[in-house]
Every structure is written in C-alpha cells, then in structure tokens.
Length: 257
Image 1 (spheres, rainbow, N blue to C red):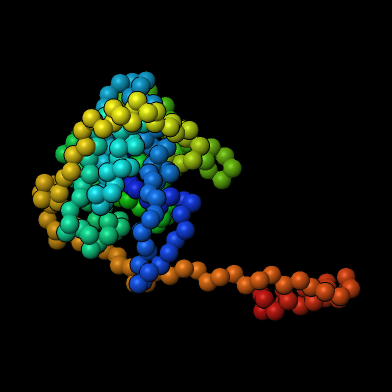
Image 2 (cartoon, rainbow, N blue to C red):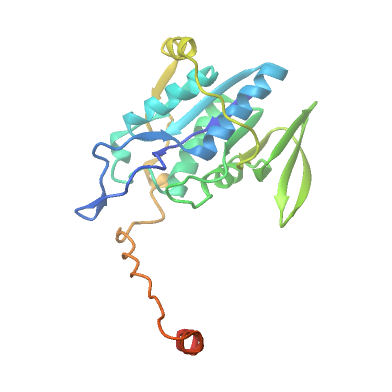
C-alpha cells in the first residue's frame, strides 16, 4: 500500500509568540511536527506494519522543515519530500489554495492508495488544506477520525459526533484527517534517528512539479498580525453578601444590555 502523509512544521505549542515589525518572530523558536499531523504519521506507520507498503511524508515549506521530516522518518516513514521554492517565500507557505494545489500535484506524481493528514494545523486552525487536496484529486475524504480499520480495498473510520460515534466506510483511494485520540505517537529511538539520516529526503521545486505560477497564486492575504490585548485584572466585590449580590447583578445587567 502506498501511503502519503501530509505534514506541516509548526511552532512548539509551548513557545511564546512574539510580534516584531508586524510579523511573527521565528528567532530562537523551537519547531515541531504539527501535533495533529503526528497522529497521521503514526497511523500510517501502523498501517504499513500491519499491511505492508511504503510511507511517504510530504511538506511544503522553508528548508527548516527538513527537521520535521527527519523526525517522521525516524518514527518509521520510508521517504520524505519537501517542496521548497524561493518564489514561494512571499506567500509564506500559508495560503490553503496554494498549498493544496502543490500537495495535490505531489500526490499525483508519487501515486497513492491512502492519504493521511492532521485534522488541522495548530498555527492557523483553518482545517482546509487536506479537504482541498481531496477535492483537487477528486477522491472522498473523512475528517477528524478517532479510529481506523483497513478491510481489503476499503477503510472503516470512526469519528466523534456530538457525544456519539459515527462509523463511515469508504473505498480506496481516500483521504483521512487525524483527530486526537486516534493513536499515541511513538518517540523516535536513537538507532532510528541515526537510520533516518540515510533515508531519502528529496527537495522539489515548483518547476519540478511543472506547475504554472498563475494557477497557485494565493487567494488570501494577511492584513495585520497582533497579539491579543492583556486581560484586565479581576475585580473583587466587597461589602456585605447582600450588597455584593446586588452589585454583581447590576454588573451582569450592564454587561448584557
């Protein structure tokens, strides 16, 4: 089975966000595999271990993304592809339209039976790229899955639905996005980290994909980036209990009026 995993590198979730000159500063920042994509990588490796095949992880981004791909290779993926092109730097690798066009072209070039991706990226939270890729490839997709079985030429996926569980079956090829709870991603061992250095990691450009720049121009633009305002200090009501209740009731009334 040829399994393709869409991967994005994001800020470590423990990092403090800093805005400098209207942009998010990347100085001294630790980058990691997007946590939801980590579930996708793990699930792909488990499927390979059970059913055989090859796992290819692919990302679009700057050269620093290589470290995230190497981590996926150390987890057990077989091959990695990074689409890096200086002409994309102005787009900042963030437009969902652009990313989906590029990733879909990579998928066509590599071939696939199954595509896995994270439900969303923790930086933008748009949850658009993977479904757009499925639309570009004209294949079905099931989002935010928490369980998965491969049965012959079909997948049986589970997903949480408002306190209940939905079970959805689809024929291969199909694209699935991983939600928290699907699995517990493994930690790369030192021997696997060393082996990952010898696994193939290819750098592709837009020209290699024979894409027309006009067709992948972004559909969105960032107008402004800023941090949320600091929260005001809490207010402590004083006086007797009756007066505190009356004051609280008046404050709530003023808040909703």
